[in-house]
Amino acid sequence: MSAAEAGLMACGHCGQIMEHRDGPIACPRCGGSVRPRKPASLSRTWALLLTAIILYVPANLLPIMETSSLLVTSRDTIIGGVVYFWHSGSPGLAALIFSVSILVPVLKMCILAILALTVQFGWPLDRRQCITLFHVIEFVGRWSMLDVFVVALMVGLVRFKGLAVIEAGPGAIAFGLVVALTMLATHSFDPRLIWDSPRRALG
Image 1 (cartoon, rainbow, N blue to C red):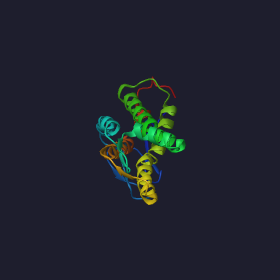
Image 2 (image 1 turned 90 degrees about the vertical axis):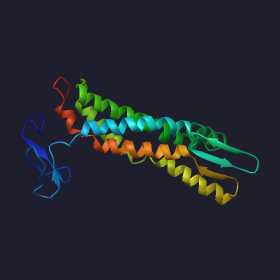
Image 3 (image 1 turned 90 degrees about the horizontal axis):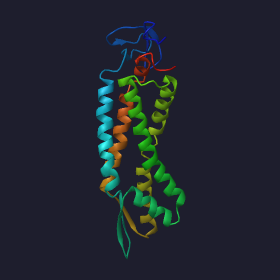
Image 4 (image 1 turned 180 degrees about the horizontal axis):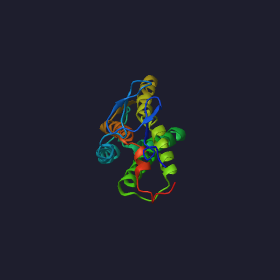
């Protein structure tokens, strides 16, 4: 039995349990606004997620950084940056950029899409595993901007050494928007909807 089925709901700020109400009410303990469910949660999640997926294409096709030295100027995409750092003797940095720029965003968008589809169509997935997946993408979302920070760090480091000049490209802007949109989509998704899906779901 879910809390909604028991006629209860919880404050999202302090966890106070109270009687279920249809409209927003003030939490008697912390005064925060409490709603049974986030309004238009699923539609806002889909809008933000689909926009992020569309922007992920230019984020990978446009150069994320431009490298200039005395002899050559190159514009590297995310994959090009991974290859650049791999061949320049920084395999650890290349693996880090690949993880936070390719692996994590793709997994995050796929998981969020699966959760939204599970709620929308009542897919028979284990609800506890769905909640665990939601907490995972919530956690990794905090580290998604690491790639942009790495590029910014390399810009300062290379300029300090006087070896070359590295500047952020338009792909970095698109990638930053992807990260921000996926974070907003995750925040918009109400995980309590998972427990509202039809009972054919396990758990």
